[in-house]
Each structure stands twice: as structure tokens, then as C-alpha cells.
Image (cartoon, rainbow, N blue to C red; front, side):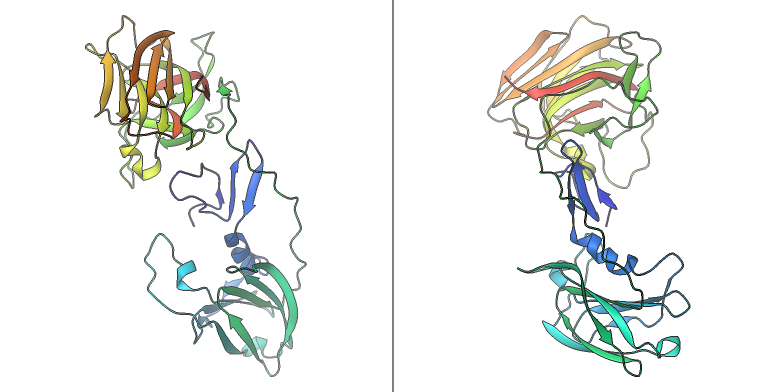
Length: 378
């Protein structure tokens, strides 16, 4: 599990890798996934301070069991018989194993637990046509510290001395909805170095900022990382923060940018990936650069290897605010700087036909952004 709650956009790496999925704050939609019920089979019947017993192991027909205690007379046993197909994780590789469709398991309690006469039973069936989540069943009678039970494949069981009420029933989730268009953000929220709503930083750190040197751009979003950090995967040399919907194709993206001391900035559409693959991101990237030869460019990749157009405008790049706008519809792309069109290209071979909107910087430099907007291309 990567996150307790999966909040980032669905089409970024490791989707739904949490106990719950709640990545549509604009709609309020959420999904309670199987892992939260799996976790509850332990957490609902234990408390801080409980410890695992040494009596853990594997079932003869496949599956496993663990036991926890409060150090007194409290006992919770969790049994699982999940098949290999539904147990694999990203890492490490899970060796092959088999689980019998149904198997009888017998347990012998000893020591402080040999006088237990009954255990409360909770059950989940996670795979198949009739799934069950966290259902209370009849108590299991224990005689002489011994009890037997049938364990079905792809099911979990908790047997416990802890008497707990069923989990509360929460309201039904609001309906899922796509990211709303048009969308605008002037970043006038609390400037406490927090993230801007809905932006997902892939490389670099974009934070809300108070710009005391400008009356027109008093609150902005600023990329603050000035040195390449130590990373655990091959991220991009340019910083980038994405927003929106991976299925966006025909959009107009616009943002005011101010390069503080050097480097450059971009706005982008149709960005096709993030995470550890962001260094290979394709899309339509419109750059404003501190460069004596070409101070603007449009590329189909974040590394600027595939240049679709470039040129030079008579403008001071560093320390001045400029409005970058990019338009993408079908095979046509166009871009303007401060309202002046710099390129208008039709190319049926554009490598990316859909993806996120994005903002970013040439390298690890401080750049400010303001008055971001994205809308359907007219």
C-alpha cells in the first residue's frame, strides 16, 4: 500500500493504491475499497498496545493466520485465504502458491486462552459474484480450547473475544463527475506554503506565496526548489505540476508566469504521464525562456528534444509578468504570448492526443504563476 487514502489523479502511477479512493474533491465522490475492510479485520478488534503472538503460521491448504492479544485475556485471530492472483503487490515479487477452494482448519488455544468458551466471528468475501464486507456471523463455540472451522478461498475471518458493534453506516457517496470545465485559479487562498487545490506536483514543489513586490500579482503559486533533490526514480530535469483530466484532448490552457532570476517556464496540454515516468512525458509544451537566440519554443516533450517551433520576441523575460496561452484541438495547436499568436501548427503526427494540463519550469528555478485557467477549446 502506497497511501492510506488515494487522493491523486486516477491516471497517475499506482492508481487506487490506498485504503480508500477519494480523488474527486470537486464532486465529493469516494470509494471504500476492499483494503479498508481487510484492515478493519484487525483494527476493529484491537487497540494501541496489543501485540502479535508467536503463534502465527500458514494453513495446510493455503492461506495464513495471525493472533494478537492485549496481554490479558483479550484475543483476536485473523485468518485469510486469498489466492495468489489477488494477493500480488508491486514489490516484492510474491512466490507462487495455491489455496484450496474450501478447507477445514482446527485451532488449539493454550495458556491464558484455554478457558475461552466462545469467539465472535466476522467475515468478508472479497472476490466473486456475491461479495460480503465485514459481516457478523454466529459465535464460534470453543471446547477445551479447541475449535474447527471451514475456510473458503478469497475470504477473511476474524475470531475475537472483543465484543464490538458493527461499523457505522455512512451516507452513500455522491456521484462521480469529471473535472469541471472551465476552471480558474488566481491562487488567492491562504499563502501558507501549502499546495494549490487540485495541482499535483510531479517534480519540484509548487506552493502558495505572497508576492509583496507586485500589486497585480500579490498572491501567486511559486516553484520553490532550487537544487535537484536526491530522488528514488528518474524524474524530470524540469519541474512540473499537472491538473485536470487525463482524457482532456481539446483544451485551452493559460497562465501568467514570472521567471524570477533565470531559466524559463511553460504551460502545457495533453501531458500523458507523471510519477517516475514524467521524464518521458509527451504533450504540447509552450516555453518562455531566458535565451539570447530563441526565447520561446513549443515542443512535444518535456525534455525539449522534439521542437515543433521556436523563435524570438522582443520582451524582457526575467522579472516581468507574461501571459502564456496554448490551444490544442484535434491536429491543431497554437500559442500566444501576451495575446500575440506566436505559432499555429497543424500536425497529424502529434505524439500525444490527450492528457493533463500542466505548468512548470525549465529547471530548478523559482518561477511564479498566477491567473491559471483551462477550458474547452472553442
